[in-house]
Amino acid sequence: MVGSAVVPGAGATLDVGLFASAANRHTGQEAIAVLTDPAPAPSTARDAGRDTLQSLRKPVTALSWEPNRGPEYANDGNRANSPYFSSQMTWDTTWWKVDLGKVDDISRVDVRTYVGGGRYYEYRLEGSLDGATWYPLGGRRGPRAATDAGDTMTTEAKARYVRVVGTHNTANLAFHLTEVSVYGTPAP
Image 1 (spheres, rainbow, N blue to C red):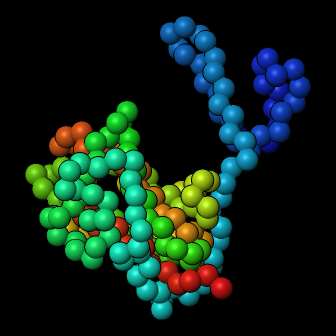
Image 2: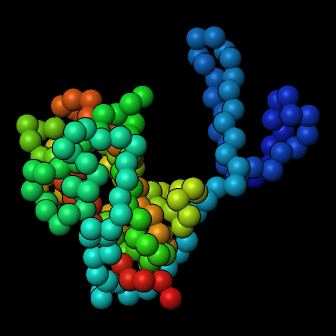
């Protein structure tokens, strides 16, 4: 729901961006989640026909990585299974991030995860202008095996930073990226 609501215990009407409520059917206990000040992706409606690869060999970092499987392997231009970036999913999540160096108009992001054994991955794709406030650009959920083609998410957004937040791998407790390609043009 979007709008205003009286939240139990708040004592007054609270303007919210989005809120949801639920009740535990076993205990009857109620809970309310309030999301204020949502951060929408800045729009860049335009013709993306001349967009170019913006992320190749740009500075990258990650929450963590395994020896000889650093974050630089996910934007080196090599879409093969080796070399690849690998990070343990501590508390069921990890992330990889590229700094495009400046705010770009992003039109699409191609994400290729490690392919093999019918495994599938789940992740969120996020963008940011400042590296602190993140907004959704896309992602992947559900049981579809990773493929050589990877996943392509089209978007119309401005971003300097693009982040892949890994949340699931059916094969093990690590998240693997072989290539992340961000396409767009430098913002005017």
